[in-house]
Amino acid sequence: MQQRKTQRKPLRVGVDARLITYRRGIGNFVQHLLDALARLDTPHEFVLYVDSNAAVPLAPKHPRFTTRVLGPRIYPVWEQCSLPAQLRRDRIDVLHCPANAGPLHMPSSTRLVLTIHDVMYMLPRSTLPASPSLYQRIGRGYLRWAVPRVARDAAAVTTISEFSRADIARYVTTTAPMTVVYEAPGPAFRIVDPAHAAATVQSLGVSASYLVALGAIDPRKNTARVIDAFARALPELPSSQQLVLVGLAPGARVHFGKQVRALGIETRVVLLGFVTESELVALYNAAELFVYASLYEGFGMPLLEAMACGTAVLGSTSASVPEIAGDAALLVDPTDVGAIASAMSRLCNDASSRLALQERGRVRTARFTWDQVARDVMNVYEQVGAV
Image (tube, rainbow, N blue to C red; front, side, top):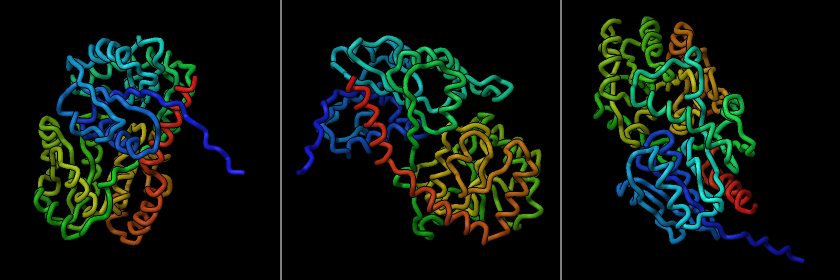
């Protein structure tokens, strides 16, 4: 006899989608999650809450999805006042806050699913130095205050790695069940036509063979040590080899420009600002090596993005990086400039080692998909909504 399919209770799910306009980090997480949720066959309705009209065109075009623009565009006020008031009017059963924090007080009929990506804002200064960016310091101060309080009353918590789950348990007290839901590279990150990649890279002012790294003023990105390691490795590298640092804000370009000049390697280092997604894909595709020497990451999405583009990866032994990279990257101590330099030299001079990493990277990334992310998150919604 054929087994009858279990009927699921239709839910009204609210999602804090403010960061959909921010096409980095958590913003990409929100965009890809919403797109994948829209592909699922479910009876549930979704209400997406944003703080800007610019976010509306980015939301999924689907009859089960509605987008609400709420003001004001002052993050704590929006999150703690505007959002909870609208939840009551919209009769939301489950609210998903995917960016670490959420409302402290909500309607009694609404249950909170909170995604905590990491707790780097809770770490002592001796472990992770403060960012020189005032904006980042203020944001991290708010999260340090809000996250433990919001997590205490959440119905469920999701996070993005086993490393983050352990870190959250160390710094945040919550009785909510915690589920690890791995992220995945976006569909744009793939192997592309080499001629197209080369032309795109040349248009960015990069004309030689190169190593690529994502740079930032934030000390956890370890950009200064990557530059020092490259300078140390130069005698062992091909004479035309360059280091390309991507994603540097104007102030960071000035800051690291001083370091590059002090080392006398101006002709060997290219400091790029923020690039488009298609430009980043081209930079990965055409690079000899992707260097990811971060001190702290809750997940490490760029690892998988580079691997999906067929790029060999030099990674870090810190935080979640070994968990996500598996055997598909060469890992070194990110605080050891000599070790980073030695690994750069080894991989740039050994094509067979790079090819082996490239093949393992393609196998590794196949394990991570956004459709699986959406199914895992939907299971959490349904478990919470069934109570």
